[in-house]
Image 1 (cartoon, helix red, strand yellow):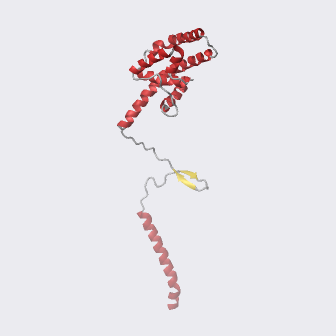
Image 2 (image 1 turned 90 degrees about the horizontal axis):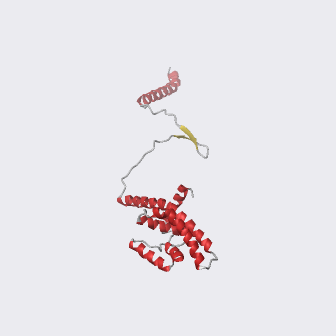
Image 3 (image 1 turned 30 degrees about the vertical axis):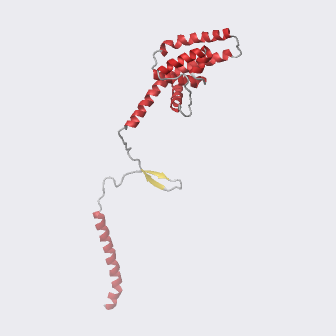
Amino acid sequence: MKAVSKIMSPVILVSILLIGREVAAQQLSSSLQIGPYDSIRVELTFTETGIPVPTSELEPLYLFAQMTAKWRKYYQAWGRLKNAVYVTYPYAKAAGSVINQINQELVGVTSKHKRKKIIKSHEKELKEKFSSKLRNLSVYQGKVLMKLINRETGNSCYEIIDEYKGDFSAVVYQGVARIFGSSLKQSYDGARDDRSIEILAQQAASYYGY
C-alpha cells in the first residue's frame, strides 16, 4: 500500500492543481463585469508596415471662447476695409483702363492742343460713367479708391492730375484732399503696407470676374 500511495501521490497532486486552477478561473470570470460596449465593432486600419490597428472616429468637440476687444476691433476694421474695396474696385478698374488708354494715345503726341483734346474726350467718358456714383462715396472709400487707382496705373492720383490737368490743378485738389484727411499722393505697396488691400482686391477681382 505504501508503494501505491507513493505512485499515486504525484497524480493526486497534479489533479488538485488543475482543479484549483479551474476553480480560480471560474471565480475570476464570474467577478468580471461585461458592459454594453465590451464588444463593439470597429474599423480596421493597416499601418504602412502592414500591422492591423483597430480604428474608430470620435465625435467632434467644439470649443467656443468670447472674442476679445482687440479681435473685435480687428474684424470691424477688416469688414470696413473689405466693404470699401468691393465698392470701389470696379471704379478703379474702369478708371485704370481709361487712364492707360490715354497714356497709349498720348505716346508721340507733342501738340498741346491734340493732347488736351485726347484727355478731354476721355475725361467726359469718365464723368458720364462715374460722376454721380463717386459723389456717394465716403471719405474712407475715396482713400481706398485712390489706392486702387495707383494699383491699376502705377501712378498716384496727384501724378495723374498733374499730367493731365497741370500742376496748379493738382495742388488745388491736393489741398482739398488734405481738408478731408487724405492725400492724392498716396503710394501703393501691395507686398507690405497695403497687403490687406491687395488680398481683398484679388478677392474682388475674382468676385467681379476680372
